[in-house]
Figure (cartoon, rainbow, N blue to C red):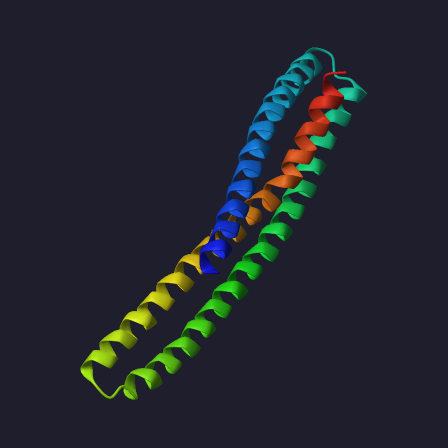
Amino acid sequence: MPAKRNQGHADATTRHALRAAMTAHELMSASATVILRRSAIGAAALERPTAAAFAEGSTMVTEKIAALAESGSAAAQSTADVAMAAVGYAVQEATQFGTAAGRLASCATPAAMLAMQQRVLGGFFQRFVTHSLAMGDQVMKASGAAMTPFHTAARANARRLTR
């Protein structure tokens, strides 16, 4: 069962990592387009200021503030989710440790104690891998959530400025 669950976490983490990489690529490409177009608008406005150039500059500032606020909110929520998961894992391990200590104390022979230690450590390692993969998945989702507002704004601007 843990192997299937771990594979599911690994698959989800891979999907989230690929999605984040594609989003980052699109963000960089759209940003380059927007920077190029806005630089041209700004350079033209130095020679001949226009209302359109002023509006573009105002839009640039307000949309960056909005994207930053959305990104910060997403990052804060994601951080809280990751922290809560970490606390949950710590509580689970503390409970497992208490149970393991009781089982080890009830072993009648050194051989029984050695066998119990192997089971306890095997269980710990399986949970560690499962929790690590799940945390990696949460972190990948968090990075995507924090990047999304910038990605959305940059792609919309690139489309608008290249018409």
